[in-house]
Length: 188
Image (cartoon, rainbow, N blue to C red; front, side, top):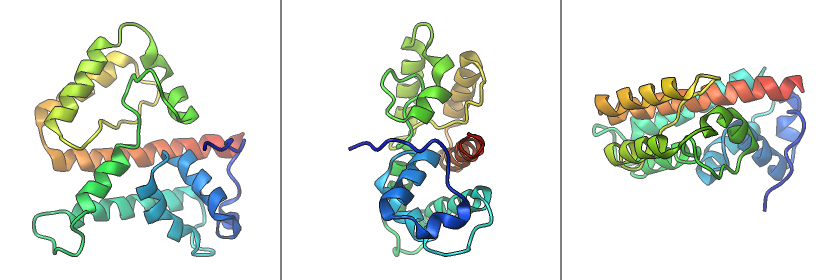
């Protein structure tokens, strides 16, 4: 059941006092709806006075997501056997670029310019990306860049073929998107 998004984010200092449902809604606004994101980041809201700004919170989220990369490396212990799967589910919470059905209002607005024209080439690139990097979804901070620029970036990343760098870039893109969303939702 979808909730109506608030018109603006509450003060960062108020997060620890909000209900679990309100905290979850804020995470969904900043990132995308994801049980794994909720599991990992909701405990951060309970640290009263921990964050001076949403930027500080997103920096901490970046560190948490990056830990999943470290914990899933071949040299790590078996303490976190599902770390890579959890990271991939987090990155996979973002809609495919150019998808016709996008549930998040934020993602729909961010990808609006990618919706024009024939989407078959972008769909083919999404499929090639996901075949090259099983379990991952291409995540990029579109930031107003035109479709050809985004598609070229996608081709370059596919050709590079480095899943570790893809995980790293996906985490960075998610956090860049979250920072942009936070800035916009605080100005409303």
